[in-house]
Image (cartoon, rainbow, N blue to C red; front, side):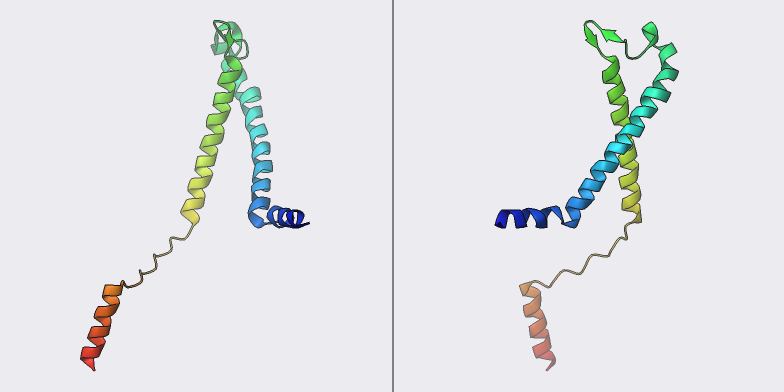
Length: 118
């Protein structure tokens, strides 16, 4: 029963739930990017490519059209994530660093100073 309880605590922590939501949203965003690349961007580029289409592009015996599509999708997603992280970082408050605690030497010097004042 202990392992089940530990799993329940782990699965219901805020970070795990946030991660799950992020994965679902990421999958949906990946679908949107796939549609943009496959249905909008590549049809525009198809007339410019040899053999009239990106999916039929071959390099020797390797079909590189789908690979190039995946690379374009990756670049779009990576750039979008870069912009999101950059925006989040700019909105975060820059908290001033807390002053460092005095070292033992500084504490001793303060005690000597206070003793001399008395």
